[in-house]
Image (cartoon, rainbow, N blue to C red):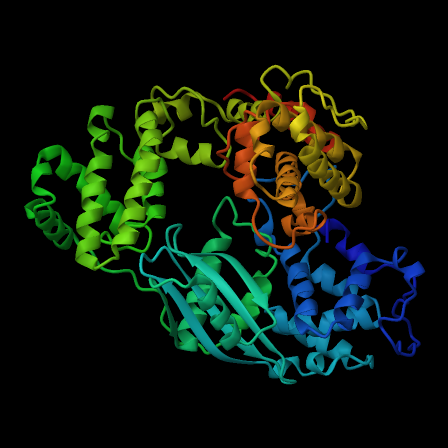
Length: 606
């Protein structure tokens, strides 16, 4: 569903439906028999529900209900956004369910039958049960027997470098249909659930398929106690839900309510993830062993011991908590973010860290028995990220609290930071927020900004090389279709402008092998992120927008990074994307910027 604020009105649409009254109406005999000519006129949600009911796969209806609960979940709202009078109000979960209770039809009955099980509210569930007992629509047997669902097996998929785990849940409905859910828990980001998907397959078949596809000697598959799976899933989901920026994929957080429901059906009393204990004496012993080894003895001096102490701090207190287990992802975090942000020291000192890290990785992997191929991959990551690290430690940069504010978009990450801890105190909240708006529209555009709609303009082929016209035209056709079906003319113009800029600035993007649908999805995603399409009041889910260009699965963020770089924009973003020009912003987004500009300018500079 595109807009959370319209869900209640969609559910309570009148065309072809009847409201509750003193007189009962007979049930509909065939929920899928509505003529095609009437489908566009009736509420979209009811049509999608009817399609799900007609599907032989129970997952279609379960996924639809999960998505609805996710949209009205307060955890999905941006934590720093304040509602404005000009915006529609958030639809609450209870309001949504009340609208289904108020509309007596087979579609709302089916949704209520799922929501009764999926919501974690006994009082509201009892109210739904009472209402459904008065309705007599012919629902699928699996749906009427949903409370008898059985979770019979849980498996944990683990890689030897321990960046994260997949927990796989095997589920069987009372009528025999099988479902399997896969939840990815990322340890590098704080043991958080950040993605999940559900398939209509048995867990045995799914694991066989995943084993065949991965063919990885470093991955293990182990059955775990179902109670342990419950606490690990619950803790990781709760931590991920309060993490900012929020995690968003084509299936997350839309699948979160369904996963939480399955987790509640697991037994209680299990054990969560236990971090290894690395007290100070144990870390000191590891440091002494390393510097006494043939690998580390040549580096045994004050600076390298101090730097290794920092690496052990990261290894034991962050990620999976094992300072002897280094992965390419951990290397990227250390060199691209953690050391430049955390360690305040001169560049001549910090510049020694990459070579120390290479040597320490070799030592650790030898001690842990990690395969040589994985060691080579991890060392390659040091080579890949060292140039950026060496540049960063020699440049002014935000550190500590300032870095955190920059990561969430409250401060300009490219600003000059001579004394980062004092800079926050010297800059007022008013100036911080105005600077964030300037990044969105350009330094010179903020005061002159207007909210006139973007014009309906054709694609500008000026300076686009002839040899890429066909490729660019295919991508443009897909972005046009997406905007025409899901959005509006303004978004189409913004996407055309962005695509033309990419093609002019770096034609090689379209000369290299790539998928046109992924490129189109990336363009729409960039423009959507720049206009807060996915964050303001849950207006649209990423996966819904992607479906309009024919992309059913697979992320677009990596392709988006390529295109942002090609167009001359920063490819580093934390929640928001700033394109620095109103030419790419639709009128509603510019109107919001104007309202905030006026509010911040009216504040006391204090």
